[in-house]
Length: 277
Image 1: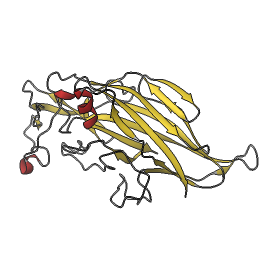
Image 2: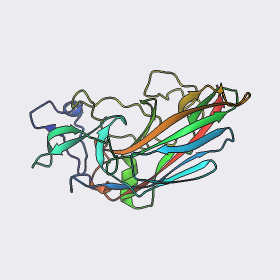
Image 3: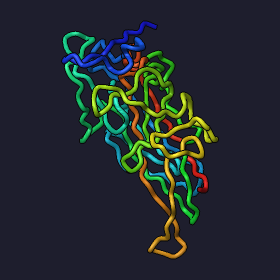
Image 4: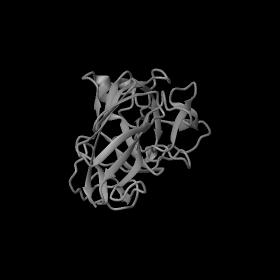
């Protein structure tokens, strides 16, 4: 496969992004056209437990949502492009006439919409009953290729997903973690990104599993804890609800984020389950 990796520099002669000089690493980014994109087909969120309820809340994308009991499906055929970030903040170089040079690295503005940038959707997760529960991503959580076309496989290989709760990224998922870390807010120096595994998550204890926070996890993929309270509307009615946001993007600094991924299509599947805390 013909890779067209590019080294990203700043126009004012800032140091090469962290690690390049020492390791010889290169950045990929789309180079055929600076507005190139890949497509998202659909996302599904499922729960197999009667006491774990999910509902659609909102999206920064133009989407159509449908729900049948414990299966939520979001479709839209949205386009995404190569950006860099940590799920909370994103950045994209402004390229100069030289395809290997950036005149600046700009903050991506998604205050009104994420269309054309990344995939974003928020759901509510509700447990019923008096027992406190931990909610996890199950083994069927995956970003996958929509078809067998090479560009779809490449698009998946450079994808990332952040799970966001209460304004913080509590978990990252990468089907094939590769290449440099995302650009940070402080400077053009990449920051470390926490990753789950390079394959689908497994609902079993994994000693090496880390989240974005320093909190230890008991099972791979724990994203939140819910403590029920009794409803004021009626005695004996206990429940707890919290919103969870999922954001998926194509990481411009991943080694697989090159021209071979342009035109690819990917799907997102979220599998949720809960265990008593």
